[in-house]
Length: 129
Image (cartoon, rainbow, N blue to C red; front, side, top):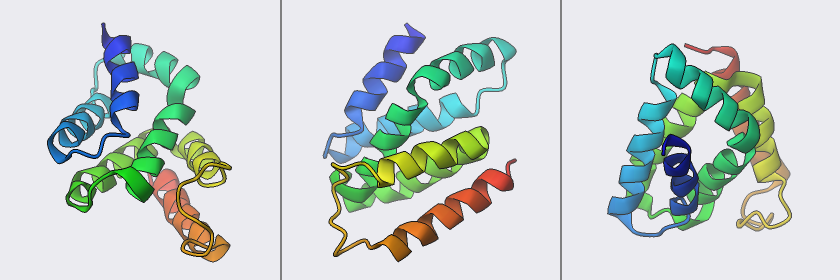
């Protein structure tokens, strides 16, 4: 059931409604902070297989689909996930930003802006909690 909830959360990241998105962000943020060794094992296993999809969903939501009032929840989620998964999170974020179907045209978000964003992600990943 836990893995199903994580799968559903990825699908819900593309929603444009504020309240369902907030629930997904809170769920994912709390899941990433669970200290239990049993949860840790389950989450680590799931993230190894699905982390790139999760980060893609979060980055695409931040870039395109999430309403602006959701940013207050989306940014802490990205911070929590990046702090938790470090260098792997950096790789997943980079893959999302460089995806051919990334929703923001390069005329609005150029290579310099992406580089600056990745530098911030790198700083988060190397200064893990």
